[in-house]
Amino acid sequence: MEEIECNSTYKQCIHNMFPLRDSIDVLGPKWRIQILVVVKYGNESFTAIQKALEPISPRILSKELKVLEENGLLLREISETYPTTIRYKWTAHTESIVSLIDTLKDWGQNHRDHLFK
Image 1 (tube, rainbow, N blue to C red):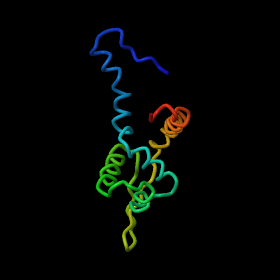
Image 2 (tube, rainbow, N blue to C red):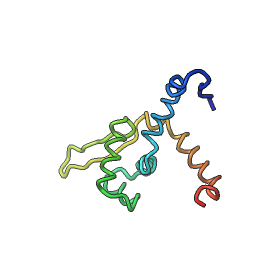
Image 3 (cartoon, rainbow, N blue to C red):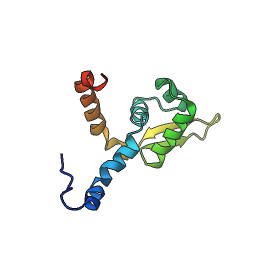
Image 4 (cartoon, rainbow, N blue to C red):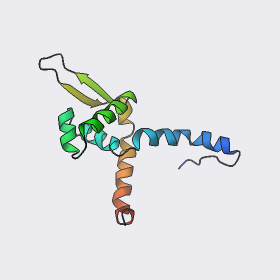
């Protein structure tokens, strides 16, 4: 892991933490990585995502999808057919975090016994 330089000033240390903090702000909330994973595996409609992530509420799912879309992690596609359908897709930006998601999953699997005592 790359060392975060915190030897100089407090202000510099905080500045060097921005990339980590930004990542956690976008990916950290409870549902976001789970939403990305279920979309990756074919659950692309709002209803399919909600069903895969029960008990997520429609309001929370809508909010989280919007944040992921605003951050370039999901693409919202609206069909030109009737009835209109909306699908969510991964972006190239999302592909760049696959190894991070796999690492988090592996860490959780390896430390599961110690996490929820």
